[in-house]
Length: 459
Figure (spheres, rainbow, N blue to C red):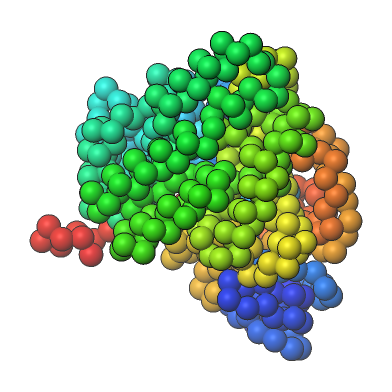
């Protein structure tokens, strides 16, 4: 028999949907995508109306934000259960800022034996060292760089001021990688936070008031203008406001590489219902916005102004998310297990083609992190990373599946019309019906191919 695995169902590609299509796999790679009668294979599944998508690439995961908490053993388990076959992990780890080749290698060595799905890594800098180690981190295999215009923590998550950001972008530009930036203006946020403290407001409203839209939009101009000045691809790693996507589009119209990522929480949760109900469990930077803004973001998806959809996943222990003073809680939420079904639900409810799911959670992230030589599409020759969703109603409960280090989720109680029924990594089934089959260590470190530099010019 020619093929190891054949799946037949509704094949979702970035540009079209194949009803009664099939995907054939050989030696861990996609071998054929077609319509009609599926060919014979050692393992063959006729899945009826099920959706067959390229495995998702989550562009923004924090596996190590809290010491002795989640780690890759759990983040990649949640990923496998949720149809995410590659995670890109952030460089802000408690106890290890990933800002040198040695730190990159340390993290690869740490994550490798634990990972159940493939992983790529972001690098960053130590503000005291500046851009000196950017080249060595590229050599060590990082897929992008991450900075912040806001200082959450001077050591672990430092603010990179404008002149230093400019120097970093200039150092990254010749490498072909992208500079991703957390978009909140430090001075503006601190001023508004002070106003909130003086007002005495400490409940759910405090967070949004402490980071109004202007704090995000000011930072976006700084980021994209720095990219324009240095000819470095500039990427905003999360934007909660429709206006932010308009700003990026204007820079692209002027010929600059300017992209924006939308996190699944900004497409799902709103301030007046969810933040009010959940308090600290819905505290995220930038904040969850009102429902009108959520709908605006879905319009941006439909118009093609969103480049990636990610989770910004972090599983804080519950005691870090339940302080009665809203501003005293840690920022961020888990989402790896549920991003794909949440996006599918939201798109179908609004009549948005599911082709966007294949584009924003697979094809574009693979291109963005220079992994598209092996990842991101159901295209012959690429890794057979596949997500299958079946039309089965379920109500999400993070503690019920056993795939999460924490039992809480801001998405608990949401009804999902489509459920991830199987996940394949390089042709091997790593999850089925919510049960993770992959052993720790079955995931691999993935990296951009080395660039050929000839006579001082990058090829």
